[in-house]
Length: 496
Ligand SMILES: Cc1cc2nc3c(=O)[nH]c(=O)nc-3n(C[C@H](O)[C@H](O)[C@H](O)COP(=O)(O)OP(=O)(O)OC[C@H]3O[C@@H](n4cnc5c(N)ncnc54)[C@H](O)[C@@H]3O)c2cc1C
Ligand code: FES
Image (tube, rainbow, N blue to C red; front, side, top):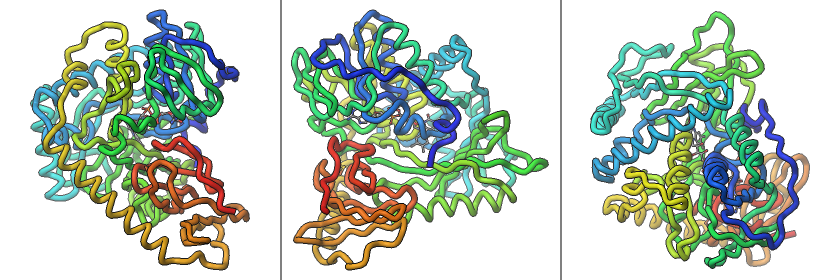
């Protein structure tokens, strides 16, 4: 399951040995769009900067996104407005507008191609139409020139649609490559295969990774889910995973040229992409909270069926999935980590709109470090807790707690079956008094602890990606227990 982006562009940076015990002005954990943009901005200001990446550049959301760079974002604006003041909504849109302009200017300056497209948000039901009305009003409040549009260019009926002209779509890995190259040219360093596991506040901040330790004046967590638990951010966000498939459409069948997103369930996201000289159609959707879907494989099959119904004869070229984090009030968090001693920053919670929000967070964090001032960034990073968001967070946490108890219970009840699972399957059961996760993949049966090392969630098998996923805060692990992503910082224990 490699994404179209990772499959069609390779980022080659020289392998750097871990700079053991070296001292930096800034260390950034995570080489996605957030981390590399922050690192470039700090390196441009002359700070000695190192990026520490657990896996490889673009390994998580940025390498597996759908990469629409849009200010019309499904129902995001009305969701913010229902939790927060109009001032915060306006600051959010202003930050996204500045980030979009920064990113597209960056691509122009570096000769990286992208396409201008109209962004559409569409509704299929009466309830969806109400959501569109709310979104339209929120867009008006934020002075976005969104328009009602019917008919659409889609080959099926929709109830209603709003559109925003002159947005853009990009190849995200080409962007990461350009950022990594500029960082190295400016004397920055990128160390891949070094996972941050802990940090002492400092100053200087003592950074511990799986590859060694170093010191830094400031540490920036650009790891998707924040990996140091002390700010408690992971508990006020939900990890949402969704699926993307790329298709070759038979010649003669019209391909929608806009970037479309439906607000009803099941959600559908469409855009085109050029790869190796041909135009493909990307179809995404079927999002769910990580570790809480009965069968992710069914979610993929459902997108396939839908595509064949609306674009008969479409030939699938790629299929992948990824996750992003939704904060309780829908507003991203960037700035100083609570209880981080003033030298640790984080940027997270983009709710699948990180192509603009990652850059906005990078502009905000780098301004805070370098002493710049941006009114929108200050309004967003200094906002207090939202009453409505807090209630949602408590509800989410209660659901999570209930799930944890239930899963411990069922793991206690069910003994592990004697026979190994069939190929591509995984099962959790009790063995030797402990919850154990057993899976079979490519003929190999592996047994690992079923208890997430983050905070004890019981893992669930993901039959689309053959991974163990945590329903609590969205950590994911390979069948052999290797940590893939999420707030956990260690692998699963072997249960062999
Ligand atoms: C399916 C999907 C579709 C999307 N589509 C869009 C879209 O069309 N438009 C849009 O604007 N946004 C979209 N998004 C959102 C966007 O892709 C993300 O918000 C954005 O890529 C996040 O970037 P990031 O750099 O913060 O995180 P990531 O890209 O996830 O990068 C985090 C990096 O940190 C590394 N890491 C993790 N833990 C550690 C550690 N302990 N130590 C060191 N490194 C670590 C990871 O390996 C990873 O490389 C989508 C998201 C998903 C999931
Ligand atoms: S990710 Fe928090 S308990 Fe698993």
